[in-house]
Length: 364
Image 1 (cartoon, rainbow, N blue to C red):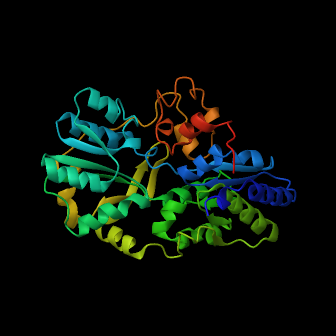
Image 2 (cartoon, rainbow, N blue to C red; image 1 turned 180 degrees about the vertical axis):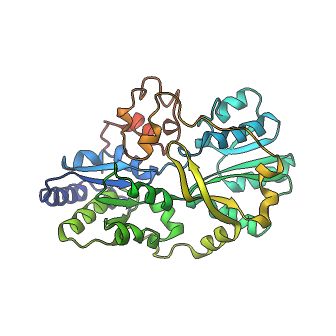
Image 3 (cartoon, rainbow, N blue to C red; image 1 turned 30 degrees about the vertical axis):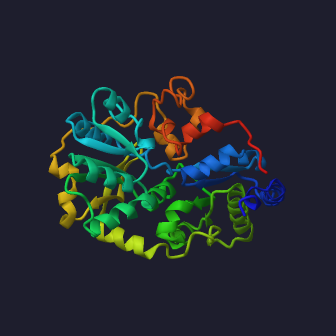
């Protein structure tokens, strides 16, 4: 099955159909995806080289660690330097806060441990018994596991949560409402949609009259999404299409969504380099506030510094700028010495371009 979705012959055939449809437009067709894994697929496999000049794929706010405000990283750092064990994901480890990253805090004596998933956190917290927190970051995809353990009261007494979850739908609404970002199509995130369901993206076609396709992560998935969008534009039949139906259902994971709704409430949230977006952040509900690390430890780190001088990460996240538009890209800012948040995570656009940009991979 995977070989079919990476077939060079099939990719060429779809690319030819895309080229034919694109010839019917005089203007540029800008299509935004909202997922770091989609950007990895597009760049790693050189899909942009298969597209006509007037069709552009741009990366939107699809990197969950790139948009975590520096202040929230500063909070985790402060706790670690007080000796409280901080569990964090690997792609969060080197993201800069206002002064330091968690990796740098660890070198200064901070108690920081990198984990793969929340089950690792539960296991280690139960075994070592020390005061600890889990730096809970991510989009809708990573929330259900934590939410289920909260609701089922399966959190060790020595573990608390520093919650920094964000929601993707409000971020896309923000992008679509901006006058300086004119999109002709949207490729919705596959991973997030397994939880939210494809219907979560209906507003794109119904409110904004823009084609939207929920797509998988293989090269053929992405090319099909582009083809579907162009076909809708040519025929003027704008709607939501679930290309990733082999994984994503229309209504999503109902059990997961129930757990999320029970454990968390939506509040306005700050996005690094973007600003405050309405109802875009998750916060523990009052009855679970005893798990809230911010309240338990009375953290007060002051305002954070989200963007360092010269960094264009905020513009890259919004699809306004490409990584190569930043004067620091692959100079002051590299994967080995990241200056901005977009260069750290494997889902960050700058990191992906630094590793694979300009290098065409072979599609089988």
